[in-house]
Image (cartoon, rainbow, N blue to C red):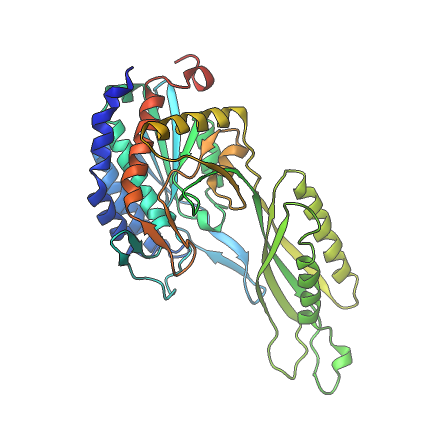
Length: 411
C-alpha cells in the first residue's frame, strides 16, 4: 500500500487539535485521584461517550479493593474505580493492545485542582499531560484509523485502568490477560521532558514496614519501654544507606508515621518506601538486604518488624522485536518531520507489565509537557495534534502489513 494514501487521514488527525484541547480540559477538570473512585469512573464514562462513535465492545470491569498498611498500623482498604476494556474486531488476524490510565496522582483534597493557561502554548492543570491529553491522542488516532479500508485487518483492544499511579496492583491481571490476545502494545504515557521516548525502564517495588515496640511512661520508667519510632528510624537510615551500594538501584523512603503523646514511649511506627532496580538480578539483592535489615530490628529485645510489598513491576528491557517496533516509529516520525530519540528512564509504567508478559511495546506515545506529578504540571498543547498524527501513521502502517513477518506471519 502506498503510504501517500495516509495523507488525508494524517491531515484529519491534525485538524482535531481544537477538539482535543477542549476535551483534555474537560477531563482535567474532573478530579480522578486514584482513590477517588467516583471521579475515576466519571472520567471513564466521558471517554466511553467519545469512543462510542467507533462502536467497540465495552466491558466495565470491577477490580478488587486495594489494600495496604495504614498509618496507624491497620489494614487500609481502598475501593477503586472500574477498568474499561474496549475491543473492535477481535477476530482480525492482527491484534494490538492500546493502554492508558484514568487516574492521576492528585487526590480529591489536593489543592491543585484548577486548569488554566500559562501562555498560548502551555496548559496548566492536574493530569493534562499525565495522561488525559494522552488519552485524547489515543482516541483521535483510532478514529483516524477507522476511516481507512486497511483497518479491517487490524483488531484492537483498549484497556483504561484506574490504578496505574499506584503501580497497577489490581489491574495487572487484566494487562497480562490482554497480552495473551495481542502481539504488540502501544501506551499513551507522556513523552519524556525533552520529547524523547522511553526505551529501557527500571523496575519498581513498593513496600510498607511496621515496627512494634513496648509502651511505657517516658518519665517514670523509660527503660522499660521499647521505642518503635527509634527502631524504625534506624531501619530507614540503614535502608537509605543502600543508595549507591549497587549500580542502578535506588531507594526512596517516602512516608513515615509513628508515636503519640510526648510522655509515652511509642509502641508502633510505620513507613512506606519505593525501590527502583535496573536489572532482573537486582531484585534478589534488594530482598536480601531487606531481610538483613529486618533481622537486625527483630533481633532487638521487645521489638518486631513486619515488611509488606513486592516488586510489582519488573525492569523493561528492549528485545529485538521491541527495537523493530521502534524502528517503524522512527520511520513514521521522519516522514512527518518529527524528531525521534530513545532514552532509558528510571520511571516505570504499564509498559513494564506488558514487557514482563512478553509483549513488545512503545509506552510514551502520549502528550508532551512537563512537571508531571507536581502542582506545576503543564501540557504543550501543540503536541496533541502532532502526536495524534504520528500514532495515526503508526497504526495505518501496522494495519497495512508492516511488521507482519515479525508479529503476524500468518496474516
